[in-house]
Image (cartoon, rainbow, N blue to C red; front, side, top):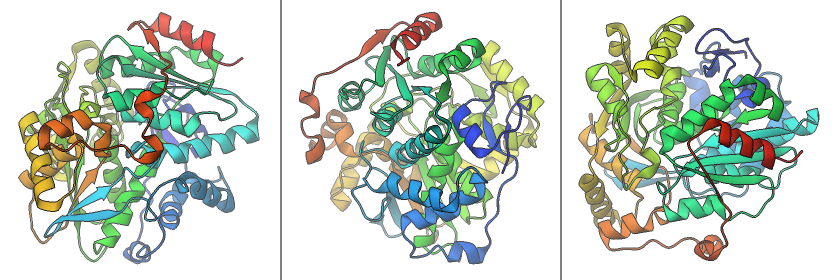
Amino acid sequence: MRYISTRGAAPELGFEDAMLAGLARDGGLYVPASWPRFSEAEIAALAGLPYEEVAFRVMWPFVGEAFSEAEFRDIIARAYAGFDHVARCPLSQIGPNDWLLELFHGPTLAFKDVAMQLIGQLFEASLKRSGKRITIVGATSGDTGSAAIEAFRGREGVDVFILFPDGRVSEVQRRQMTTPGDANVHALAIAGDFDDAQARVKDMFNDHAFRDAVGLAGVNSINWARVLAQAVYYFTAAVALGAPHRKVSFTVPTGNFGDVFAGYVAKRMGLPIDRLVIATNQNDILHRTLESGAYVKGRVEPSISPSMDIQVSSNFERLLFDLYDREGPAVTELMGELGTLGQFALSQGAVDRLRAEFDSARVSEEETRAAIRETLAGTGKVICPHTAVAVHAAKARRGDPAVPMVVLATAHAAKFPDAVEEACGVRPALPPFMADLLDRPERVTPVPNDLAAIEAIVAREKVA
């Protein structure tokens, strides 16, 4: 399997090099040169298999010669050994044909663990072979950062720098990033919002002299391996609910478009997905794009679902590449317009294709709180605000009641205790292994929204 840039001007790479590179040299994102396709028989054969076996079968066509079969199986086994549920990503029923896909059973209680624990193992295996040292930088709206730090803390050959928007993540999210004491991890609180943090990370990758000097690598959802790992749980959920013999729909709370794009990848691979519903909070650029055909950057509005407080959804570029028949120059032109004008308009053909694949809904703060209350009353389950956004959106875009609707439950409610308690009167407790989180000492570096200043900190603090 070869990987190409969405902007068409970077060299093709194999899986390992694309994974380590993160962002392509031309500023684009790596995608497979072609989509592997599973037959109905191959999908049906996934039924009843352990999560790790499904993960191997789904991801193996994308890996090529980067790892042997035995190496890759071992990497997968180590990645998910620390999850607290034997099914790894279990389904739970919340309605007659409505389900939650629980993605919060990893070490940081969020869906990012599903991909990040795997990436930690992949990077470590690769770096041990090469003897190289790399510097990982990432931006987070809350969950990616803690998952990355947990995946790479204490690992040899890796320094990790995570930028998060100061004052715009929950206290639990912040402390998950600032309390690890490992010398190779660094939490950087940027004066700005998530889009500022994400922009500075992309700027570092596009500063090729700096990128080469510190051995820069990325683990944001710009990294293809992240998206690939997330595609697996669409297969496990759909097969458990009857695929390929019937279609299944999914509703995904998303800001950066990576998690729902993983569903699109699964569909391209042959999984019979009926609808992919994009659930947004008031930072609704994706919903507005589906409605109007124009991608117009707005102002980030803080919300009780902070991991979705995003106005520039970086993974949308991967979808644009397919919407425009994989024409790199067309994507380059659109992303240039976004950079200079803060917006671009989709062609009518691209709009039609977009709407053929996705639905969307915008969910208000009060609707989010109501979904938390109603889910608790109807099922006894306490859900996080992001999951609540998706629960409300799923009802609004339900479609055929005979088609199972799966809501991606992206985080444990205890990561957002204040918002949950305000909504339903129940304060969710952290699990025992994290019970003392709020008492642990913090280690954090405030940084300005300035590329040179951030680069200087990374260069100074990384291990020589």
